[in-house]
Structure formats: C-alpha cells, structure tokens
Image 1 (spheres, one colour):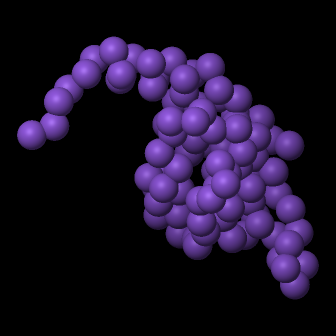
Image 2: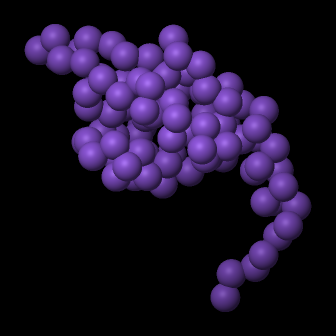
Length: 92
C-alpha cells in the first residue's frame, strides 16, 4: 500500500508551476529536426512526461540528462501539451 502525503503533492505542484520549460527545435543527426525540452524541476518524472508526450504527438523520443528529446519538429504542439500538464513553457 502506498502512503499518501498531501505535502509532497503540494510541493510537486508548486515546483511545476514555478518552473519555466524551454522548448526548442534543433537540427541533429542527418540534419533531421528534433524537439528538445529542458528546465524540468529535479523531482519531475521525466520518463512519465516523455511517455505522455510521445503518445499524444505520435512520435519517438527519449528522456535523459534532465531533458526530453522528441523526434521531429513538435515545438508548438509540445508546448500546448506541457501547458495542459500545468507547466509554464517558452519557445526557444
């Protein structure tokens, strides 16, 4: 059974609201566009967020080193999805 800690939930939500994510599109290997998302709080579940983004955007990608990398040019759509999750996002 998992213990419910309301204080932990509140601090996670505050971290989410105070963080400012940056979404940028870069040309990487073979001159293909990739969407890079940085600026997540330390306790953010990057694996889960990346999974949600990959599912909703129908693309591949990964999460490592505190950033999420999505295959393709998904800057605007990724920004909209992250804002729906409660993050403040800028396009960079």
